[in-house]
Length: 508
Image (cartoon, rainbow, N blue to C red; front, side, top):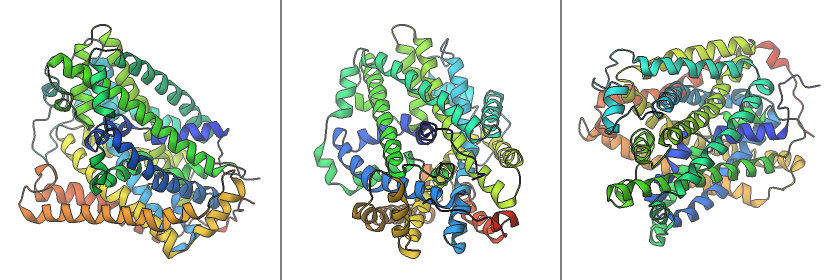
């Protein structure tokens, strides 16, 4: 009888995996990326990227976790003792992301409250940066703690750590069974209302009208792979950890397809809702849709409050529903991100889950206070850019190359997945992981390193967002380097005797 924690139902696992994949980026990143890269035509490279990178890597990570029955570090250790560091690298990337991701959820909680009477006023940009975040310091300076961010941040960590303390079945699974259906219902209400607004048709026309000339551009294909990669929660230990809790008889391949297409369906839904609202805003202001398109923090906390101000009726309610959707999407992702280091620390150091949650979650929550200061947005911006670009994407490239070409484990993993799945993996899967994905990710990483290193040595302010060399060095490059360095250091410590002596059984 296996003592490892398990999901109670297959639906519980799928909801948790989809909940991890569906995050803030689905709502505020995908619509702008699609619009900027060919509109409706972008779905061609997007679907190709999903089928040649997204789902193949999901299958890879589901299989690794299921076969080796451990967190990412333990799974890679069991695959090959020299590769444990790779699992820790992904875990440390997740740890860094959790420290600032929680703060963005705290913003969304605050804005859920502000929405009822549109406390942000007419100048939503000034409200966000001056009144709410109190961004009155220079990059590199912290200033004082901002109470309006700090107090909801406490609530975010109480909820997240409470769910993790309850365990896999009673905590994570139960939370996602509540969060994800609620999120879908709330967002459907928003979308239905948005598509009925004046100007919605113009917004949707801008979103879906294809520019087929764009798909001949290599940058559009790279953007498609980047979107798939960053939106599926792959390559930073989550899916390996989650799949390690699956029962021995689990359909790995089907689960991956359901998770991948479920995530993409929500991205499409988000695009419809966002561009319907942008079309409405453009008509109200007498502008073209292209003039109001935005992404990221600006879309969620500047543009959407402007849209909500213009709503003809019940704007407080719909504003609340939008930001509540961000909270739910963020919490489901933060829980999965935090579970990676809870599982890794618990197994590596032979401590209880409770201690691992309190230690890992405690350290993460304390560090997150940095991003709740007056200068927190600058630190968040730099850390997010570098840990995403030189953390997640780089881990993914190394992971695929190590498994496919260094360890040559694809045949073994394929055999394991085929033995328990309805859909058999054939040459398609190995061709994607052995050739297509390494080439695309390799090109992406080469271009990113070239661009950012040239910026670093160009001018003192030629860096990302014009930040100084010093600031970029310690808040960007050092953060990305921290993940791999600490990961290597963790792998040097021997495993707890109980874990090392434990004999896991491969799924027959």
